[in-house]
Length: 79
Image 1: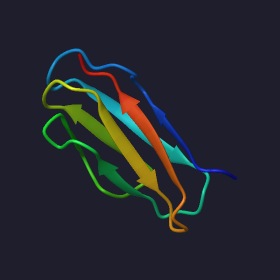
Image 2: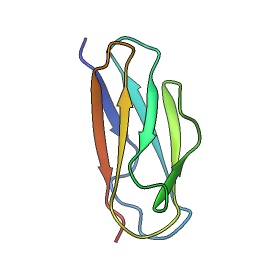
Image 3: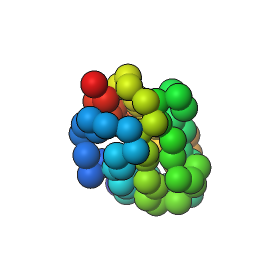
């Protein structure tokens, strides 16, 4: 099955709000990377699910990659 990435929130309005990101499909294990660490942090860089915490303004992209190099991206709106 193809790799999918879902987020419990599409927008985080204030600092320290959280979203749960979940990967499914693809070929585990998964690795996670956040595009802008100044705008938000991940609870872990591995696993099926991670918690993203907003730490500043600016939309942020989170990428999950499976063991075969397939990736999926979600963007969190952070006004």
